Image (cartoon, rainbow, N blue to C red; front, side):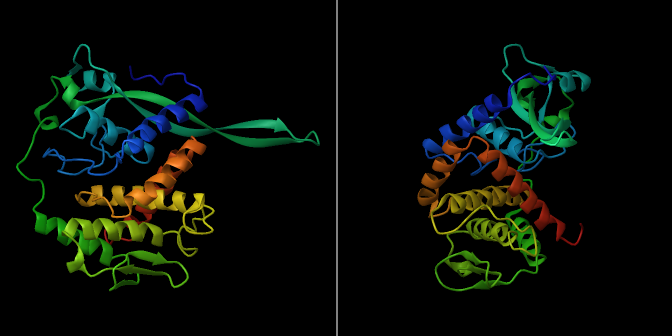
Length: 299
């Protein structure tokens, strides 16, 4: 039900990672096109809690993947008990989806000199939630749909305002998109060279997530030494997830990049070698997305 399940940390890390690995090995990125239903909560959205607050980090990936696999039409999730409190009930025979809660406990231990030292130990708890499509009897707004949550022109306008507010050095020209940390510059092809506006903004979100790694911002160093090494793959995964989070917040679909196949092999290698890598990447991506949002005028 709504209680956290007792599960050892390695088992839970491995189970979440294995599920994402299974998608990647089939060539499916669970964070690409995370939402297509025209629900009142938005055409493209992060997964939402029962109180319409968005999930963050690894839980976004878990619930996007489950929504796509099960064909749910709403982005809202709740526990068994929350459904009861809202006057509804989970349909008999429905199976819930896993979300996780991460925190740390502090323990005092004696060091080699016999002195007490405090050690922070990370832990995970798993919770079960249900999509509102699995729940009956909720108030009507939980099921409401609209013809279109946002007009395309307004979505593009919002994206223009979002990236403009970053005050990043973004230049256009050439046939490649990249971030140069030495010059602290984002390079983008011309807007007109993309197949559609959403592809342009998705690519810009990816490069602006890289932009947050600069020492003057989040100072993110994942051990990248050269192109295609493990550190490179980790940073690209952070940028990919960061772009997915930003695009969801802007109501834009995340279009696959042309270099998707080249990145895919690196991601698989990193995730297979480290069961915690996807958790770390999601955490870094969330921090990057939050940093970009923090630069907006309303923040």
